[in-house]
Image (cartoon, rainbow, N blue to C red):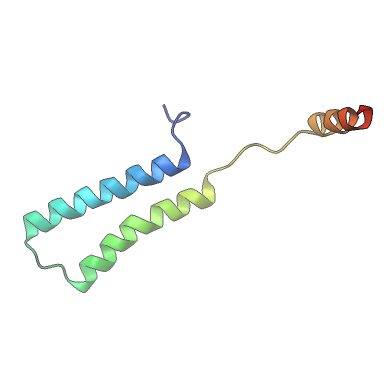
Length: 77
């Protein structure tokens, strides 16, 4: 299943999950959200997607064979 999910979709799911947890926490603990709680919620929301963007690999680099084959094709045209 993880092969099908895109980077943007994974980050969107993470933001939705954190928003739901924040809403449930606010309802259970009351409407008072202190500065520390707000900072903690922002960190929980932004740090994992930022790490995911840095770590998640894109398309693999072209191999030498693919580069040479492309150069051959261009030379023939």
